[in-house]
Each structure stands twice: as structure tokens, then as C-alpha cells.
Length: 100
Image 1 (cartoon, rainbow, N blue to C red):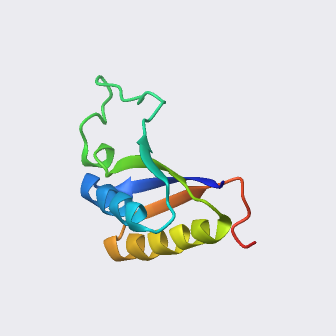
Image 2 (cartoon, rainbow, N blue to C red; image 1 turned 60 degrees about the vertical axis):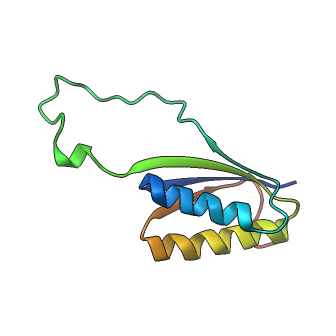
């Protein structure tokens, strides 16, 4: 069973829209937002603290279980299309080969 992980750089609403899309794809058994395990290295005493450059969109990581590679490909295609429409960045992580 392929397990896909993706990282969304965008607003909370964008991540929720992608999560809802994933839950609506037939055959998807599990969609979960996983916590960010790495602490943020923000330094309150830094001269750049609080500047606009430090206040970008959020990062959200989702974990998805698909029953087979065909469904995993559908997931990728659907997420890429919605990410383009929402103007967010999505990075995919997988040990599986997408083209096979």
C-alpha cells in the first residue's frame, strides 16, 4: 500500500482544501496532517525578528495512504491541479516510483 507524504506551503485554508480533495478521492483510506517535529529556530533578539520576510505562509505536511499506485498517481495529479489553481507550493515525498 503506497504511503505518500506531501508538504504544502500556503495558508491554512489552502491546506484544508487539499485535504478535503484527498478525502474525496475514491480508494483513499487515510489522510492525516502530521505535526512539524522540528522546532522553529526563530530568535526574538534577532535584528530581523518580526520583519515581513519572516512572516510567510504556513507549512503543512499531509500523510496519505492509497490502495495502489494507480490511485497514488490520481492523488498526485489532483493535488497538482488544485495547487496550481490555489497558487500554493506542494512538494511530494515517496519511496515509490510515480511513473510505474
